[in-house]
Length: 280
Ligand code: ATR
Image (cartoon, rainbow, N blue to C red; front, side):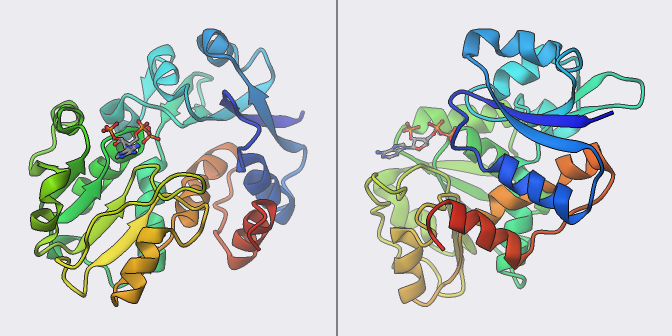
């Protein structure tokens, strides 16, 4: 029997998940396994998720804009998905039911630890730019890692307040963009979770001179690999971590659950994805 897994999104053609998972399927010689793209319109998402087995899929990844629909459609979730009310990975449990999980925060932390092994979560506040879906996963993961304080800087402060309330974050604060300098004071980590800096968009334009020199700067944008923010941070002497590894690492737990082998994020995989993005 072929074990098929798919990524569900709309649009989904740009997803690099098939490239990543099919690379691991080949690398680990998983017999009769296949990972496919499945373009699913918003109005069809719940139905598709409910009938994954009937469509011959043993699992799936879920991407924008279906992560919340996947959460609402499934009846079983792991603790992280429950907290975020968003699902990016669906696995079939032993009793045949589908469970929704969320590995985005795991991917963020694994990439950060990979790129900045000396990062100590407990050593200082983290400043997070943005309060969207990615920010939710990252804020929850940072708190779980033991970051003592999360300072959220967002254009729309009400959205940051909603994030804190929905996640029940214990030591998070909201800072208007005009007070970014004060938010950066004494921080150990700066992370951009907004889409600013992506090719074709304007750059994050905050002044980072108030950030302590030993603070690490990371971005979830990976096209380009070195965003304007990361470049300025590097030139100012900060250790920087690009966002591509988050995409690669978030895929690891799903692959392990579906196929029983824990894959590795290697330089080779990174090069393959970069080449596919036209950035090698
Ligand atoms: P995702 O779910 O992928 O994180 P999102 O929900 O659209 O994406 O969130 C995008 C984030 O980028 C938000 O924090 C957004 O700020 P607002 O909450 O004020 O909308 C931020 N963002 C996007 N474009 C921006 C811009 N031009 N200037 C400042 N912030 C921006």
